[in-house]
Length: 77
View 1 (cartoon, rainbow, N blue to C red):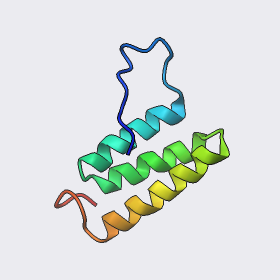
View 2 (cartoon, helix red, strand yellow):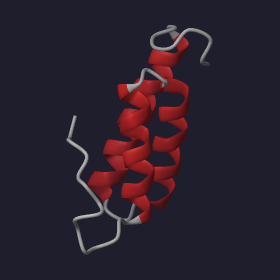
View 3 (tube, one colour):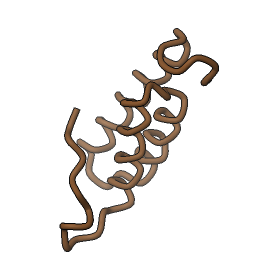
View 4 (cartoon, one colour):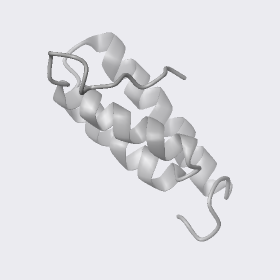
């Protein structure tokens, strides 16, 4: 998983795709796979590059599976 960069030190604002992807990564790291899946779905919708769409789609599927199997935070669906 990539390391999140410090946006305060970067002069370029994050793209909409990266904003959704950053939220998804944080949710995954916290074991909130339902939230992560929703964020990856939002990233998939706004992805402009095929590689980003493919990545977001595969992460969304992974997170859906993890949520279905009950991984992560108890009570989070």
